[in-house]
Image 1: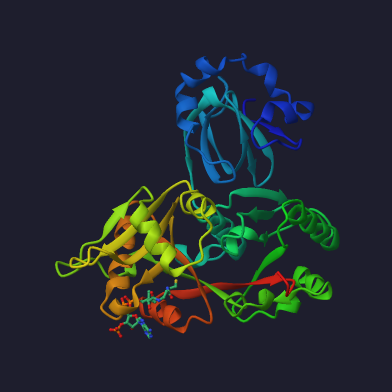
Image 2 (image 1 turned 30 degrees about the horizontal axis):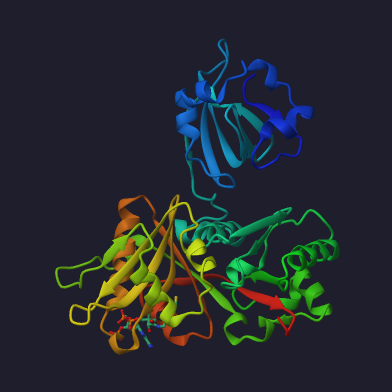
Length: 376
Ligand SMILES: CC(C)(COP(=O)(O)OP(=O)(O)OC[C@H]1O[C@@H](n2cnc3c(N)ncnc32)[C@H](O)[C@@H]1OP(=O)(O)O)[C@@H](O)C(=O)NCCC(=O)NCCS
């Protein structure tokens, strides 16, 4: 059968080299040269799929099968010119690209009933948000995601503790500490839980506290970060009175300069993280008199989700509806592009920010904290 399950470990870039031990499908596909493969509709359809994302692949079945095609839904773990490897709920399958009828990235699955912005699990939302703020240097241990970006932001320089690290917790922590030591960076762990969760109730966090790590690593804004979500449909639409908002797919210098006015940036790393997602928009409002940007945000684009990062309004222009206008513009793009849900992250100690999002109808999906040695 095409779409044979495979069970070997996979390399993220070359399924051929790592899965041959356990698979039999290789012989079923005539070896295709890269040029020939690139000419097949199946190859073109799968070219845009993102490794690590959840995908649905409609796949042609061999002649004589009960149906003409079947769907595989799961995480795309590897691909090359000839094959895709997808981890479905029950098995790992190796799919011949030439036999792909249709394929696309899809949102994370629902883990409970509710609207799209509520029904996703915290682990899945964390993994999605990591793609909205991609670190320069990424690694993994089991499900944990290791990120380093020359110190630009906690999110892009911490180990994301999600799911199973595939090793006992202490060994996994040793691995992470070594990974950061090799990069000359302090190890920082991002650990999440329900709203108000007890940090020492999370086994990884408890093990870190025993090693002398501190909640927040000595920073107030790292103690508790709220992950808030809301429906794009509920955000007020732009009106005739709304100030003009510029939305740019490219990171322009004036946007970056305004961003750098209010945040610590690391030249090189900042640009790479800001532009590192599969899709993003840079939004801004310019003061017609000074011609300077007075409000901005970055929108990360995902299947089914929009992410909002770095929303900021110049202190002289606050409480005039500029942030609301930018979020309205983001929500408009989201609605037009089949993204019913929006996420953002805001430090719990940022009362203004939290008040703003609550007023727009956003709620806390879950929370996270950073654990770092106080010296980090
Ligand atoms: C939070 C922030 C983006 C709000 O920008 P803004 O343009 O002033 O917001 P808006 O004028 O659109 O505010 C809409 C509503 O949100 C609420 N709100 C906004 N700022 C608030 C504040 N400081 N305190 C309480 N409520 C606030 C109010 O209900 C306000 O309506 P109102 O002015 O009619 O009472 C701005 O204060 C800012 O840039 N802060 C620093 C960066 C930041 O914290 N970003 C958000 C993190 S994700």
